[in-house]
Image (cartoon, rainbow, N blue to C red):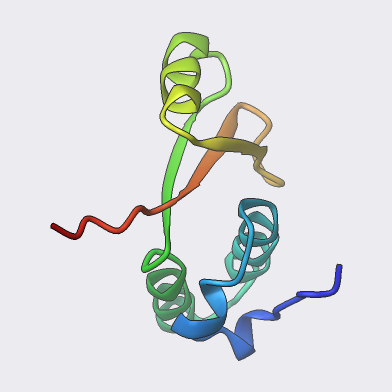
Length: 94
């Protein structure tokens, strides 16, 4: 992947260049961070560009509804019973 970003280099500007798949990888790396404060700061940067939802993998109706609204789903590394939905936020300018 040519646009690989590691969590320590994460900025608001470069997070905007990520795809949903790349964002899922970055989030997975962020979750491995030991420092809670640092992890929280990094997640706030990701959430400036992406909307995140974690739902039960068994909840197919809700997953289908979210997919309709543009969410892409990725399995969680540490919990096979849940999936993470990620979609890029849209600009709401009048």
